[in-house]
Image (tube, rainbow, N blue to C red):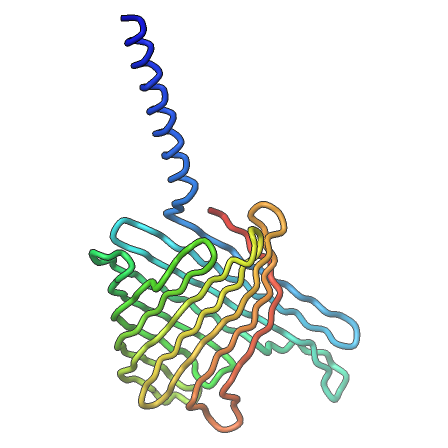
Length: 253
């Protein structure tokens, strides 16, 4: 009798231990909500006086039926210039911000999804006062493991924009995008994102290549190269904008 009771107690203890270990493993492996904050600040003085600030906030939210991603980023730069009379003036040379959100509805195979996407960009020194996009279509996670991941989205949409001269550019588009991640080591990773929105008036493309290395805890250093390209711009305006940055990234969750 005592032997049976002892056996049951040992079995119950073992099952409880396995269940607890599994619960903790699930908690460690599954992060339903993550958020990263990014900030870079550069000030130069002397012969050249400039102030440059870049900041961003990105978040992902994993639910049973939904996988959502959010992004907000901005850039500001000012230079101090000297006039012909010797007077020093502060001149803003870059001022832009971008926000986007994408919701992916998971089908029976959770790697197959239907997506909805929205974005808005305000760039004071580009060809456009603002550019906005609404799109929907197919999203698929091709693979996602400990080392690498790759997913893409493609579907129709509608874009609305206004040039600096007041001309409107509204119409149907086809949006395509992909994101790639490579975990180089336990403390460093490489990411690549790309999107393009093809329309009859303009094709807008964005890309970012980034190398992120963990410094301590949730703090990391990020080296990135961004491209922003428009095919239809006014005279004297460059089609391609690039941004190279070194920023600090903090993972809140």
